Amino acid sequence: MAKKDPNDITPVEQRFLEAVVQVRQQPVPAKNQISFIAKEFVQVNLPHADPGDVKIWKRTNGRLTLSIRPGWDHDNDKPLGYPYGTLPRLLLFWLTGEVLRTKSRRIFLGETLTQFLRELGLDPEHGGERGYAVRLKDQMERLFRATISFEMRERKEETDLRERKSWIDMQIATDGELWWHTRDHERIDWQSWIELSEKFYQAILRSPVPVDSRVLIAFKNTALGLDLYSWLAYKLYQINKDGKRQFITWESLSLQMGSDYADVKNFKRKTKEALNKIQILYPSLKIEYPKGGVMIYPGSLFVPEKEPPPAFLILENPKM
Image 1 (cartoon, rainbow, N blue to C red):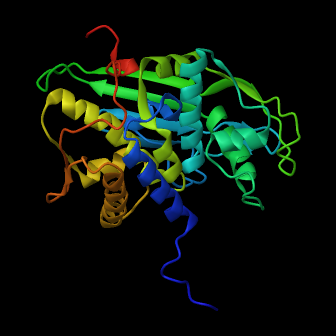
Image 2: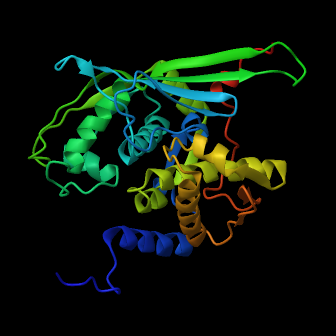
């Protein structure tokens, strides 16, 4: 077996280098290069790996908890499983952008499956049993049919014995029609659409976080990279507003990222690798690693905003 030439680069490395050149040459993305994600999915993330056969999956970030209950596979009389990995994340970026573009709950998924795959930044020719078309079908059903809950617990003051508990229980899509022909992506008249739930639709309109789609393509094979990039996009806004640096521990960041790393040291290593890549894309980004966590400093936003992101939806209830 021939040895790999050290000068050869992988497709993943090639995409990253192309993104570096594009972002360095044009730091502010054009309007059609801006994607969005609802802030709820920045504060607490989806699973990175398949949680397997569990009744409910959940993650907690401070006072906020995300939980997911899978939809039901009526053909096989079993749960559909949990959305996980990069594909549901790319779907959420795309859906959020379409909602903001169309201002409609009914979203059409392109003329053909080939077109839709390309809009997600995926290669339609990537075939086989685990090709993108097959995996996308599986993850779309998992994501659209799952029940997703965000729950917040808070007190006015630390000494206050009263606690407020607020929540949102929602599906991404309450109605839909999906057509599939995984061997003939180009010619089939796909006709696929979904109708977003009113709660998810309103969450998108009230709390979109802008990101650069060129960077999403560069990180499309790493759920952790997509999560960290989205998180930093919003975190920089918060830090700039406060005007001071912020320290986040490795333990709390691991919980927030939705990762399933048993070893925090392993999570720390992989997170540093992803953050270093983001710093290559954005040299002005200042991050340090004091003992126990990450220190982030005020700096330029990845996507300059004319207006600040609105407050988190379930916190906008009347005061206690």
